[in-house]
Image 1: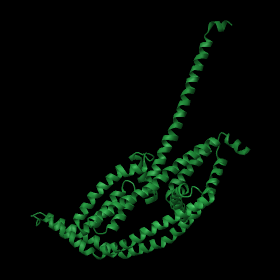
Image 2: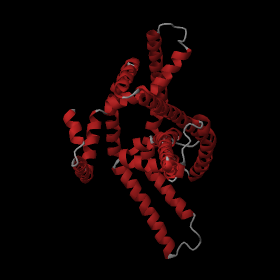
Image 3: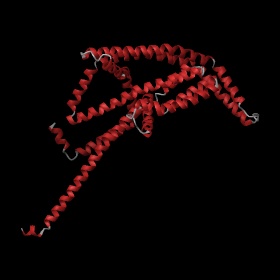
Image 4: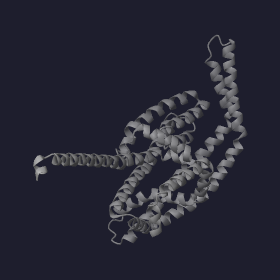
Length: 401
């Protein structure tokens, strides 16, 4: 330690350190692609563990709710928390079984029916295009329009039919990934059980590393981030469930086909901020356009109305003011998150933007303002002291003395 302090005070140390930092920065930037690939590969090795942590984090609020309400009269904290975990896990399993038992058969029927009737859907769409042509449809421009439209439709149909086996393979691979998610789910139960020990270990480590003042600041920051993530994840899932359910009811009332498939697409894409509802409307509208164009028109109009209500009524009621972040921040983080970590980065764009906004408003700006204020006060004190010294030096009585 003594030798290190001596090195720091050497004149050449700052120059050498700056040169090393410059070289290291150049090497990192020039090999950023390889470094990022290695980083993502390392993360892939721990994907099941990360998934388990995410599931435990999402089930934790439900277990805490049961702990505060149903098991509040039990005095022994360990027993209370164990029973809360068991009930939370049972609730999640029953909910998933209920959803899958209703959803999977309808999804299978919808997808198989859609692929088998794809040719008839394409022909009906071509007939629709020809039916809306004006009287001078014999002109070359309209004929070219019809031919190009039919070629596009036939190309899409041929692509879907040729790649239907790939879709089945994707489904098979998705089924294999279920095993990993089951392992992650089991791991999440263990993580919930060891939650208090893990928290105590993290607190002890932070207290050992940080001063009391910095520990308090770090605890406040982590608590605020935890509140943002908790509120966003839970209520975003509820919001997607509400939107998907309302869409399914609307389609069932009008007797539209593929209500289960389209509603699942709408509910899932609604989880993605900003662009998700638009993607869901395009996919659902295209599917219904192949079956019955009038239903596609009704669906698009209803989606616009539903998303307006969701944006101005449902989401503000669920999220409140805790995630009040400007749209520009969210858009920037969505673009950056999507480029860096794909769909996961897009899904976490709003809480990340809220955390960055909190760091900027509550930590960075106050620190800069305090620094600026202290610098101004020091300058004023120095100026005042110099003026006082000058006045004292020019005092004739003081010179005589």
